[in-house]
Image (cartoon, rainbow, N blue to C red; front, side, top):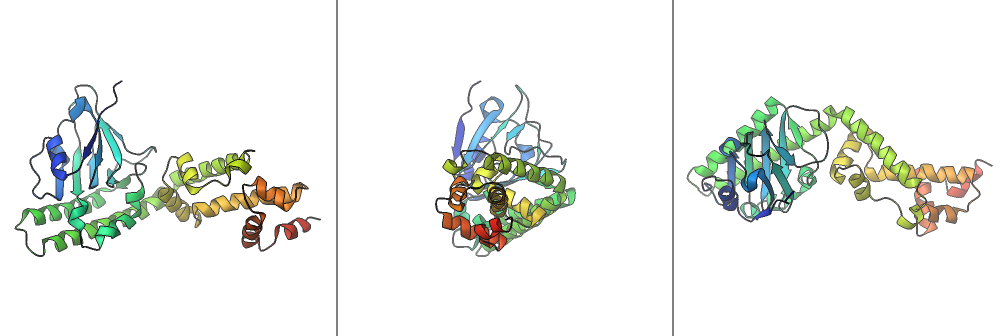
Length: 306
């Protein structure tokens, strides 16, 4: 199977041209109705990298989208947030016409120049999810998002004046705030799925700490754990915070302390040997963490079993 070409699109106009759309009404911002896109280039398969932000709301998509690696159990509209530089792709069956509904907002970083969102947009966690998580919307939530996008479109298609950018940026901030609310709702309503994630986290950490090469590899990083679970660090942290009130790093430390207690109470290894075996380069660091977590030094904990 041929590997599809990756299209790097530097401008919104290039996207319009590639997808057979009319020229955008504004060079730095565009609202696209997916129903106006009927066929993908490259024989039904395409991979793209944007040099601009993309916020899309899809429904009834009849192809495969290479965006995310988790299985979802919702039938509502799906919302994606893609930052500049991220790779995503779509694929249709042979000779199949593209069918999907929804809307997409494209915003070039230059449009945000000299506004608080120029840097602030990076602080919204869902733009850091890379290609792992989508946001599932109810019909009411979809209506809210689409209404904001249409308001932005109406504004940039009107006569541009000194207030146009401020009005559009304010609408964008409103959209992002709603998205943050909806993501928080998703963390709550998807508790069953997230409890499965918690079970998988326990398996990953148990396997890691039972591995004899822990002393060589060192403690597992948050990035390693997230990749092992096929989610991003931000998504994992958000889910764990909702379920347990603890971050991923705190879960790693809890598993570490659990393993340390086991060795302190069932073996005659010295504290230094245990520290090195758990991936610490300096026993003092291990002792400090252990005391922070348990209010006892490793030796005091061991003596309590004497």
